[in-house]
Amino acid sequence: MKKKLLSVVLSTAMIAAVLTGCGGGDDSAATSAPADTTADTTAEAPADTTAEAPADTTAEAPADTAASGELIKVGIINNDPSESGYRTANVNDLQNMFTEENDYDADFAYSLKNDEQITAAQKFIQDGVDYLLLSAADTAGWDSVLQDAQDAGVRVILFDRTIDADESLYEASIISDMDQEGQTAVDWLAGQNLDAYNIIHIQGVMGSAAQQGRSGALQAAAEEKGWNIVAEQTAEWNAEKAQQIVQSVIDSGKEFNVIYAENDDMAKGAVAALDNANISHGVDGDVIIMGFDTNTWALEELKAGNWNYDGQCNPFQASYIDEIIKTLESGGTLDQKVIIMDEKGFDAETITDDDIANYGI
Image (cartoon, rainbow, N blue to C red; front, side, top):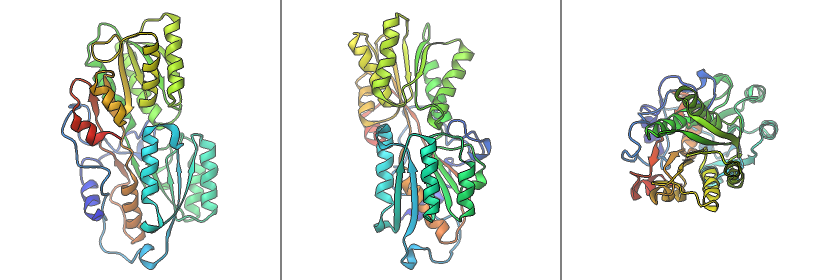
């Protein structure tokens, strides 16, 4: 059942020509975004991206490892599951897919620190995994360990985030276009035509693809349009740290009318600080609230008018990875190296219950 969908996905606008990958990746390591994500933030929902994955892109090939009765050994390196609601959904998706029932022997390693992830990768290579699946904490520093993997015959598949490494060092990359996520959000903000833009910018973990893409779009727009960045600081995806940042700005007496938080949890923390100070926010409020990830609870805040914008980041990549592995195991080859997840943005004025049901995580 999954084989039919890969042929569709790999032949559609979800995969196209080269672009800068998820926030600061090498230009040769990514492709252009899918069909327009900036035009209509309430367009009809695409087919469920969590269902079935891409299909075999080649002709018939020898029997795969699973068919011979052997489990496919994979080492999966991801960010901390407690990082955010997005990450929890992403981790659960992978854990549900990579099981013995699905012909896998999987080990998992979690960290928000690049050096710890690299250490985990080195151990998986030494353990003789067949595949190394990687969502990197930082875009840089991976060339050496990926070369070690290649030398050891370990195939690497990137998911969720791209890295600054030659594309010959990995088999495929299933990612969100973080640059486009940021641009979609910034285009929406520019469209609000505010008399003044005084922005608190709450950043994610510095150096991550999500932070680079979402920060880059805002910083470029601020420079071009003369927007005032009142404060710009990392809260490392954490709600409490975001609340502290906003409280500090409130205490300083600086004026602001926009909070651009690079994930939903940090937007939630920012709102807590506003509520404590009796500052109105959302639709008809004094402060515009922007988040990313489309957690279900965040979209409900949007529909209630307490927030103004939420940008989608699709966490469901496991079925795509599974089909790519099965294709490679069967002796097939992939027509495309990079798959870009289809994503959009949501506005409080137009979001519907169907949007929440279809896109909430």
